[in-house]
Length: 204
Length: 413
Image (cartoon, rainbow over all chains, first blue to last red; front, side, top):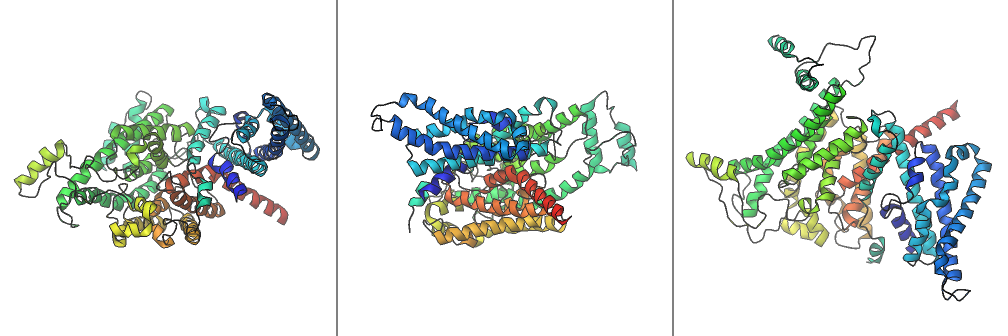
């Protein structure tokens, strides 16, 4: 139940893009068509879902004072987290290039750039500051990734639709994407304020 | 024929004064359908003539809500004061009070909204896009009667400029304009549009406060013909809270609601609320007009009802607090479900446009809206946000319905 709560919360209620505005660069740049957005979204789910538990273990067993080394090494947190994320992204890149060269080409530079996607590092840092345990960090990783995925394919579908609209020339492209993100953030505020944990505590 | 000759005579020059020509064109097409057709050389795709006729039907379908809303503003005001509590007692006072509250809202909405629309149309050299006729008719119905007019003006301007003109005008917007306007007020000025104090007009400090129109103009007139008058400074009755049924239900479940309001009151709509959303039978008349003319989609209405009902039944089964235990069919008596279903969710521009997509779209509006209403302590009612939420996903739903169709056809081939 706890797993489910954190998943829902990360995906819908505290969406990484639309509530925290994390991971904006690839969100805005790769959302031109639904197909590529779908691919990038899956990659982000994968990377978030894998790196979160690995980073949790590194933080817990290597960096903390009662870990294996017995020293407080938390100042190394950023660099180690990024190293884990970068290596996972390399893995994703190899897989995508092997199995879907067309997606690989359309994602271009933005696939390796998942490494510096702030949603992913941000996710790991949220995990630390919220003191999640192992299964919670898995839930948070998958939920956060799913929320990001949902946001980017929704934006991509809208941008495909407004390609046929008479958008003022100055706003075409990124300008419209920014306005859309703001409006989507407003719509996503609908679920903000629901606390699944408090609801879970309601018993008969 | 005299009228058309008159129109021909006063037509301003399009090059010299584009704004006047836009204005002229708007009124001309109200009166006549132009006989000019697209020539072989040019394209004028953005022709709103038929759109205008469609939209007039939607506006017509709302008129009953306007009539009742006008009366209900006054009725709620006098019920709070404990004067003229019978439905037809003091009818002239209720009507006048309602008009004094509603007309400024209506006028400001249209002056701001249509003004921006005219300005953009003249700038682009297009004919006026009549999209704002419907939005402008909807916006006053979903506002509380005491909303400060400057807030209304800002929110209408925001909705029209950012929500519509940035996307290229009528028919291009992604989010429903009227709801975007309301959600702007809701997040930017939450105290003006939520809580128990805003739904009954002119009783803010516990006494009736009237303006110049009430005390001077109409009191003078009613005195002179010997009818009852407005009594400035009369206090509200002790039992008055101003809470809406949803506010009561969130606090104490269905019993708390029926302590204050009867089900027939909720059905006929003599309860506090936004101006036009309270009377269910009159909204159903609007639904009938919209469905029989084929303007609104019955698929969205039906699936939205199913979605809301399914979620309400699930909440009944869960039943962890009094609000969840409200019998699912009574959920539809409270709040603005019917109004949102009839006029907001069925907006053909922002809804999903494929038939199968409409089922999904409507179902999730009902489903998410009921979740927001019952499970989200931050908001009293869910339909506004649920519809905006699904507006965001409507293009995605359409995309996948189309893809599914394409791959099915490919397989068949």
